[in-house]
Structure formats: C-alpha cells, structure tokens
Image 1 (tube, rainbow over the protein chains, first blue to last red):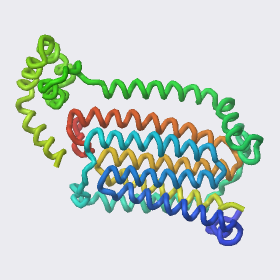
Image 2 (image 1 turned 30 degrees about the vertical axis):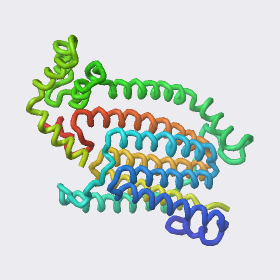
Image 3 (image 1 turned 180 degrees about the horizontal axis):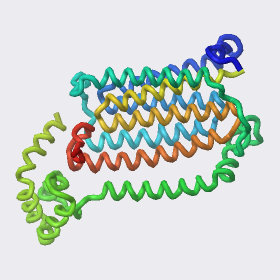
Image 4 (image 1 turned 180 degrees about the vertical axis):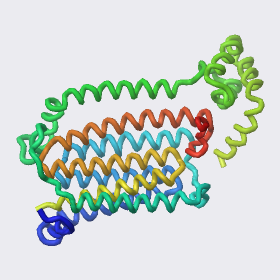
Length: 253
Length: 101
C-alpha cells in the first residue's frame, strides 16, 4: 500500500461533489469553533463556539454513516453538556471578559504552540503515512449495510459484545451522580431566610478553616439562632473577610 | 464514493491539537474543561472514521461509551468547580495551588 500523500489525492477526483462540500463545510465549522473556544475571552462565547464545533462533528458523523451517534452527539453534547457548562457559568457569575493579554509565564505560550505544531505533525504523519485498514475483523461485527442500519448494528454490539462495559457504565453514572451531590453539598445546614442567613451563605464555607472546623463552629453556635451562628462565623473569619469582600468586588466588576 | 478516511484523521489531529493548545494556555478552569471536550470529540471523530475504514461497528460502540464517560466527567468536574468557587471565589487554575509543597 503506498504511503505519503497518495491517500489524499482521491479527494480531488473520486468523491462526489456533495461529499466534498459537506466535508469542507463541516471541517471549517469544526476548526473555526475550536479556535473560537481557545481564543474567546468570555466563557459564554467559548461555550457557544463549543456548540458550533459539536454540531460540525455531528455533521461529519452523518457523512460517515453514524446516524445514531450524530443524534446522540447533538442531544447529549450540544444539548446536555453545553447547557450544564452555561448553567455553571451563569450560576457562578463568572461570565465576564477575561484579559488574555496578561501572561504570568512568558515562555508558556510559545512552548504550547511548539508542542501543538509537533503534535499536529506527528498525528498527520500517522494519519497519512501509516498503514491503516489492515488486519482481521474484530468480534464486534461489520458496520456497513447491516439490516436495520447503523442503529440496529450498534444496538446489537452494545447489548451483546459490550454488555459488561454497558453495565459498568451504569455504575459509573451512579457514582458520578453521587459524587456530584457530595461535592455540591453544603458544609453546614442551610440557614433560614433573612439577612443573617444571607450573611452566612455569602460568607460561604470558612475560608481559613477545614470543613471539620466549619462544622464544629456551626454545631456549637448555630443551634439556637442564625444570628449567633453568623456572629460566630464572623469572629472566626475576621481576617479573611476583607479578602473575600475584595474578591467579591473583583468578581462583580 | 465518499471522502477518504485520511482527511477525517487529519481533521481529528488538528482538532485534538487545538484542544490541547487551549488546555495548555488558558487559565479559566471552565474553558479548560471545554478544551478537554474538544479533545474527546477529536478522538470520537477518529473512532468513527476507523469504524468506517475497517467496516467495524466496534468503533461506534466505543464512541458511545466515550460520550457516557464525558458526561460523567463533566458532571463531576463542574461539581468540583462549584465547590472550589464557594471556597476561593474564582475559577482560575493558577490560584488553586493549595496542595503545592
């Protein structure tokens, strides 16, 4: 099998015009969106550029005959994951412009660029010159021209050959949900409504202490009233409050 | 006749490298997560391309599992970001050096 750029030549003559246009549009969308994710200053814009890239990948999935994966790509990635990103960005209030010009490590960007060029060169050499498309068929079964299309073929494969991996995936998802709940859990019981409660929650977990200390503070002071609890917290973090307030102002500005 | 697989592999290489570059140069944890998603998508594109080139449904099945793992990773990662933001009030990776010796 000849190596080198011979593999790229058939694009000029053999593939149909529709395929070429689809691939060109999809590839352009993907690369532009990826560059937009990297260089956009606002995290919200980065998330929208990510949606663009994911849609381009879905288009190329259709072009390659993976219709089910294209639908899942749009639903799960562009639907769920990006919405989760946007939700967290809005929830934390970090949707402000970021100054990309300041760079504390002067060598970092040139080094990263050099690494990127090296990576692209190596991967392109592998993609173009290596001898792919050889070897025996795996046990998973063929992909093209199956009864029921790619959906039926993928379903058969997932529920027979990869059944154990599929069941392990269920365990992984349960663990992820439990982990997310544990991570997002508050360290102290939520306070009632009112200004004291607001003070307590806006302070957040004690900046200078460990979670155990924070729990101990809450236990010894927070039972009788939220006011006493807020006072105890204020005494504990007097030194840290100024810093957190100035950080709040930075966040809002 | 469809596009040769080598073009898809080249596109996957470019996408993966752009994602890696963003992961290296950006300091916002959320944007770094998005760059990881870019790299995962490059891997997915490569998997689907090989599934077509080798006529093997195993590549598409792997993409299916990568999607699930990516969703779980984003959930846990964003939970970590929220927990860190409550404590530190920012999402910049440079300021998260509490474990530095």
